Length: 203
Image (tube, rainbow, N blue to C red; front, side, top):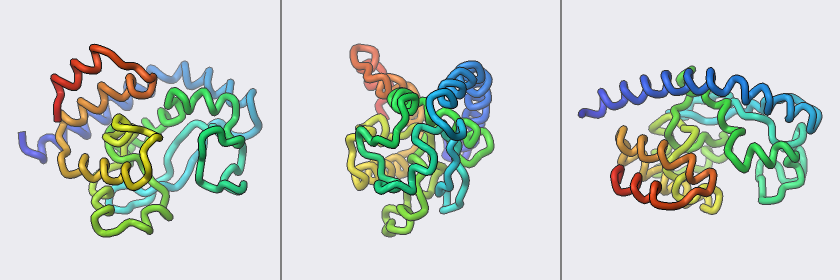
């Protein structure tokens, strides 16, 4: 199957799965939204300018996990483990990756994809060299190759290296591999089923 057809199918899958996901998650979102409001002052959602495909800027949707105006505190955009700015409810939704799920809205509108490099901040992109800018050749994703191969234990250069590998080796089969492994990586699952997925869907 040629790349053009695969790209068309990728977009169709993005539309269908993001729409279905938003419908299914409407109830859980309402419960989580109420918990966030009760836990700390501020809006339920956190919107921030991110860099998308070909350097185009867009505003991503996330559930708020930190205190209001957290970026104005000493640590700025850097979020270390145990960051005191993270709320109690925020720690929970971050642990299970729930804060990223509202980005299904960005997927539905075409600013993001289900799978791709994680969207980055403009100041980070400004530091990219020519090779690192390859990362911007595809739409950013909710999950990606770097996420299932280390997630937050990776250094920033390691994440970029994995993202570039994804861009250079992209296929629908690779996307399927990433989508199937993501829940188990986030939940910390291990075992035979993951090994079977790896064997069947080797990219």
